[in-house]
Length: 428
Image (tube, rainbow, N blue to C red; front, side, top):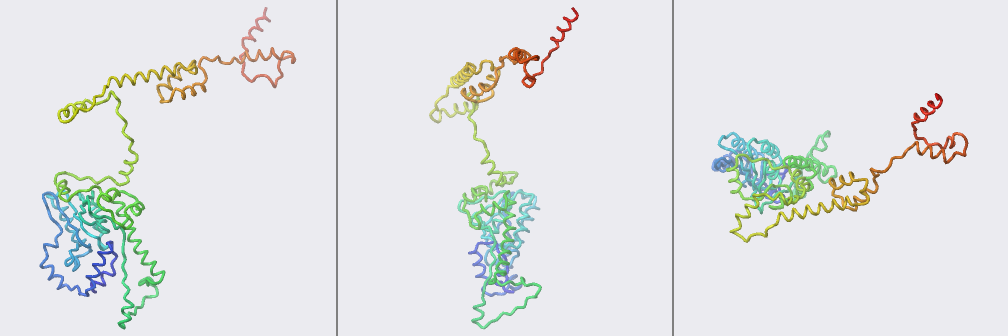
């Protein structure tokens, strides 16, 4: 198999321009023979190692196109092998002198095969892994970066290009011009084994393959960044890239910085926590209540001392008369209470008026309306017996028994005293 044939049959998570370069190199039609590969590697063993240690920090470098295994692409074009990165990652994890790992990325992406496995290893690493993108962290390279606990980018770095490319080169016209015919027989049970991209069902098959691989890619990034896959698909560029601070604003990275500053922080800090999930950061931003101004009497002594210490360095700020502010607030509160309690509607409803004053911020007019709708505490309660006797007197001419039965009040009347008086008269 030629390198060109291998490149054509590989799904890529890579920027289109980088894929074109790879295909151009592969099109030179050189056979990848074991002898040629080993002869070249013999002169480049040191360069094949992606790991460097500075103090307690291991630097794992991923540059150029990314491939599953080392081959002539990784050697001649400055590419990187997932397998070598995974091996060197394990070396750093097993080294007792290594406290944290800096994943240094400058890559347009690479083959899908092998990327997911390495990303899972980075995400599950027991030692802190921080990704730094100084140039490009696109496609498969961003897949790896997103798995780190934190992502730091240079202000000119490009992140994104999330998606999958599945390239097909059609040379049939060229072959026909040269008199070359390719004849293939596909088993009847397997019509989709070699689908024709010119036919609707063939094109749909290739599209589904690319979509399914992209769904795996997006789901992994969503897990790493604490988001939903639909959010990643909609908000992370839709295949485009973000630069520097825009990548941080979109949630693809956590901060803008330099390589040396990031390395110094890893050397200095004992542990690097995983950055909060993007959805939690957004929720905190949207739901965080506005800070309430401190009460006049709660001004801290530390603030006053700081003001005094800076007095000799800069013009003194205007002083605030705390006692005057407090007195004004107390006077306003007393005025509001007196206005409420002086309302006509408050008479006989004093308890309710006190409650509305102390427990609410209602205006005086609103409290007036509330009090007017409430019953007065000193209003006489109705006397059912008296009402009944008054009705009997008013309807005495209606016959024995007073008012007709249908018009008598339904109130229950205690007539025990009346019966007792009658019995006393009978006994006399």
